[in-house]
Length: 330
Image (cartoon, rainbow, N blue to C red; front, side, top):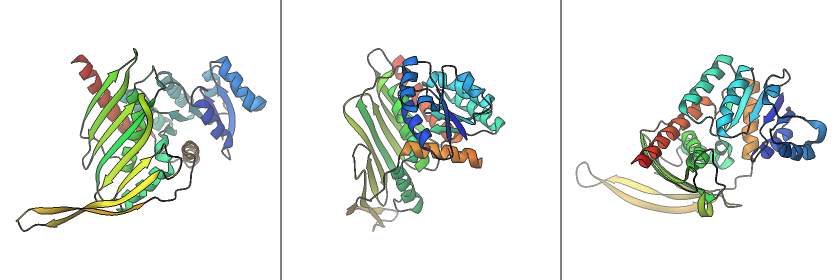
């Protein structure tokens, strides 16, 4: 299976390294407009790859089975659509597109061409998120009550998207995965634009049918934080992705509910139990994501982070962005 990479900027080198490391995959080449970046790639891969600045050369090559797109959000849509028209399977960096309308177009074209599209919602391929998903599905966590996320750091400041599109998309993908694809009922969003660019800090509150979620996204925090708190009625967990080890802490805390003496009333008592830190072996989430994509292409099965999943994520983001614009106008 021949795979080509389009875009060798911020994230491209990581994708290239993992593509080259996957068995049964031939890393065909790299498409990149910057000569300086191409020279960096050549120092690593020498003459093993084909190098080009024209992505049409890649997508029109009969040798190529799939493309991995790692450009900025705006140009990635046209590249993805052109690649699908040319009959190539597509792995695309998040977000899958800048709007719901564009996401639907990608979805419809992929279905028409019977091709696999996989959006790199990398966190759902993290072994810790998979562990939490098993806890939820088995009933160990109980019913979801709320999810609270803080994804903040000092830069980098992007110009093509705001902090929500850059950072919260990870968390929305995780929430969609953990909840089994629950559609949101309502949301509120606020943000603050700084340095002449789009919102550098945003707060997003979402009401789902059975739980609520809060997501803080920021490029202007003095601390780097990647913390997700997930509270169930039986147990609660904290995933701290900044920690080197012991990233997941499970709290056997919850509530005991019993009927009270008064008719129709209930007594709710808090329960504090043990704290457990499971040993979850490290796995490269990006490599997991790429391997999942490759397997989907080979088996002709839809990706966990394909257009259907990505469309639900984009519906939340588009509504949230409209809320941000509304606050700016007010």
